[in-house]
Length: 96
Length: 469
Image (cartoon, rainbow over all chains, first blue to last red; front, side):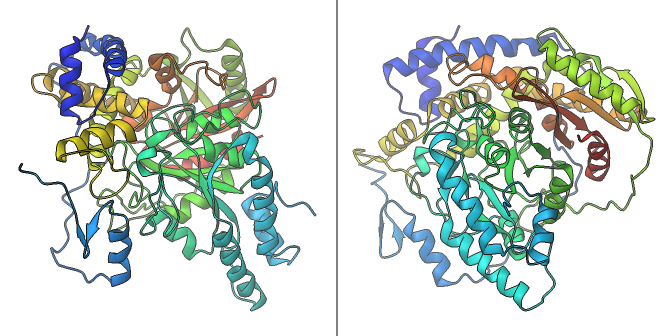
């Protein structure tokens, strides 16, 4: 069973602001899911190489070049920002 | 004439022969959607203006006597985690409630270039996390076959829209069964293509090593037409590749594997009976049926929930309340913006999966969970590789149970996860599979899953056509 402190720690790592009730709920939910996942320990994985790619492909690269974007495209993105000034994204101060 | 139950081919012929116009075809479907959306709620956004403009352009093409691509003028619906330029795209999440797509997903662009008519964006489980479409932040989709039941998920809106003749076909995405399981529940055809077969540029990522876009359609032939239109390499998605399949599978006799691990205790006996009956019927057409074993099947779901939630916790880190989407207004500093925007913006299941993924990736647990899961995943893939040395394709039930009642499984996440027990292995192995309707219990559809080797979609279509009723 996950402890309340562990659950709060995970929520903090995930940057999820959760209330008291939710922490309790997830403590219970995660514990039962983790119990189920324990099943994997039955499998002998001694010499098995971990899976990395569904389909074998060699490195896919492209030229590192700046492609021109039209103004209309840029404006669409700026419009999606919750807060902006003169086309720049506005954020809360990082240092107090 | 009524034209709402038409397949792509039938609708195409109707357009070419001028039995109806593309505008009329679009309007017929829009009217059904508007009439039924209160009860079924398959659509989050109806794009009437876009559909009418697109169909008008097709009518002009027809009037000019131009060559008409198969999908031109044919109405379709797009799951709300794929971008259609200028249209709201929410992934059924509060965190993206007011997000307007700034560009087209590659699949959408391909359909548009062929003259497709987009009717709207379909409901889904938030960020494609769920098996019932009950996790949508904006309302539950009802199964058109029985309104008290779920349509499956996460592409439940797309499946319901096709089943209710609200659209000719739809696009969905499938990470652990999210196209095939709703196709099963609603009695339509649903294809999860090979990993890499279809570009995911413009699809909101859930679990990047598992996600694929695919069609939901009324017939196997329609699914084939849509798949051929959307597949292929895209420079904007480095995991996409070209399919080089010129093989002709028509009139071939196949050896089919039936894995014993998919007929275990817990499967609805009525479903088993229908599936077994269908397999015998296929055998009587001259194909060979062989019992096989996929020994690591019972570990697939546990493996899936480690891999998928790990990737989800990383993919969904982009929703920070700063660059786009919901931003908490009361936050006083940067950390509070993150905590409040994400805590308030994400729904319960999304938070649960982010928490699980964060936990299994956190310091000290990586080897025990993620690394072990990736090793088990290699074994699951190996099971399939070995099976495909002996058989051409594999038949299984798509789901162990019928479409369930709304609310039946919402209190128990693990019970909900078990809905995907027969579909997740295919995503883990990166291989293609289709679900096709093959019978009914009362009003509720049952579906059979056909699985093949990577990039053998053409073989899947050939087999599925013979199985189709």
